Length: 433
Image (tube, rainbow, N blue to C red; front, side, top):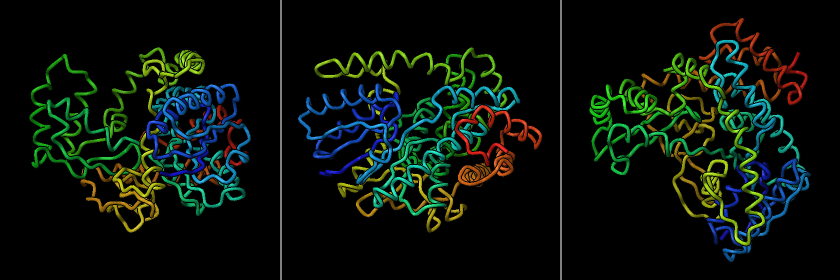
């Protein structure tokens, strides 16, 4: 039982109620712990605190929850920092999606120009968290869900000694819909994925002990001309068969970029626009549940569902309870666990996690057919992290030109200036000049 002090930076976000429900679902694993919710809006913090406190009481847990808008005060003497915040809110995510499209480039939350701008905003805040931790909690470990998790982690590990583990469920979930589309049972498969966050591929893939790919090929042949199968499901299965490796869902933007861009243009709203429309309803639901004697979060009225950030909490539990678990983590490729990537590049790999930390399981190399694009995205990750941490406009433009979405230097320069202007209130002067 880990009795620890946890600071949740982003504790007033639309995901926070579900995150606290997830933490409390671990029950006795964190009994006796103290959670500090940190955010900028006290009214939203209050709703999350009331929901969490009532859930803890109903479950008979000795977990206390408090709130603060003072980041340094909230971080004082913490053991763990759970980081999941969105500087600029969904309004700037919408700008990250729409502005690139004006330049003929895909706009996406964690990929390409949009992902780079989100990383710039996030890393400016992460730097203040690191400064505060150095002053008030020098031993704290960061468990990060702030996107893009790979660029954030790349910057932190390159420029500080702070231990940071970043998480994403992708390697656990990306492959299952591909198998389902092929008519296969995911329970009969073993799939291990590796790469960089949101851009991983299967390096181990078997079905009933046999190579999975021929089974996928047979499944694709059956549904290739079936108009009842959703087009994107069909495309991702096609990609797995063509490349001989199961892809992360985000590779749709690279291998079917023209199709995605045309379809995005036809939509009335981007994904951020959809979320902005839904947010008032989420907060209405949280207000209702904060007033209930025993809150019950409705997965259809809660951001992301009723249990959020579960993988981060699994890693925290394995670490602080010394309860060994095998889980995917983003961390530096120390020792070359993933062949073909530099030792200081943050990679997403399966790890054995316990009180000694997260140790990468030795990985098979990525297939040559997909290794190049993943290495390119890893280099973009490094360039974006460096630009965000202490670079200039010139460094940012170099990062954009390295990304496959961006066609040429002129597009990179004009697009960057457009994005930087929209983000000017969240960026240092060095990135605006």
